[in-house]
Length: 315
Image (cartoon, rainbow, N blue to C red):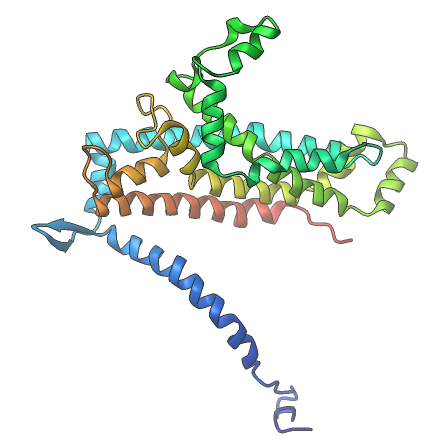
């Protein structure tokens, strides 16, 4: 027995410090700090400063007061926040239920070509948002798009409209494009959770006469609720960090008339500037800080309120 393993007067055994864990984790910690922690801290710190006569001056919460109190800034911010909330709600009400339904269908043991369907549905998530945005702009174009032709084949051409060019439908159209691209993610996560349910549980349900969709609602769905909760919070974080698809489809101005403008596009225009608008790093950092606080509040609410009430089953 070495001196490190000798019991101390309290009767417990002193274990040696595992330095190899620190050595193996150090590169990852350094890289994560360099590309995530330090930029985040710098952005939060920058939101308390402003440029006065070419010099950085500490202004406290003045930037936040301008963002929420100035008529021009407040109108743009609240419009972007409202659109972001709608963008998130559409994903929650359309993308995640469809993903759950697809996972339930693909987990049926008698379904043929299930692997092909999983691959086909998940494939759009691997595509670049630039490709997805460009393709859907072509599909929905009223001039050279294929949508009017396809609707005409089923005698529904009267339903077609330039959805991406109308303020009352542009945000819904872009949201549904995003749903089409990313519905494979909740589908695969729920599908994996369904496969993790032991056969003994399902066999016991069948012996009690619970089969088909009744088995899904009464047995499977309660068992995968923790996975659904994770998907919901990932959807929240992803949607309030979203920028790329709207920028590709609608441009930095997020038109028409700002109807598709969300916090990500507002941050981009504010920080880097666009066309005649000059970049303002301090106000851009302020918007980024508000985005961070919104996401932090949402994640904290889930972790400390919802997740604690979800019942987790161990198999």
